[in-house]
Image (cartoon, rainbow, N blue to C red):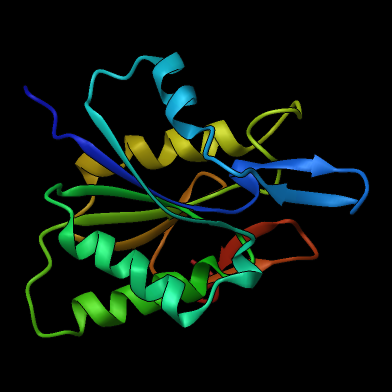
Length: 175
């Protein structure tokens, strides 16, 4: 069975960050490390990358979200991962779902937002590789739509919430 290619849309966030001791926080890299990481793991599927921005998600603007949406809409691929910072990931998921699913056109793409609480490179252990791998592995089991993949779960945009005190995502529906 020929597997569909994957389009990864990069926005920055902790998954694509490094620790900056002078700021005592993770800071997005100038360029994404994800293309090199994906080469290293040697996926069987073709992977294409588009970098929209390299920002902490708390710094994303409406204009940035519109650029992400444009990249999704213009993508020729049916399987899309959006790497994103965790603070506002649910907001972006809802924004995209509203514009695509509520925009009157039939969405035929599986769009999965994912990220991490710990940078992909420079920290061990990190949840980044797991979350990215989990998102990539879910394409064949999901119907077209917008999803968030974090902590080994798939969430709909309407239900997902970040529980900052627990350092994880959950459903407001308590499923």
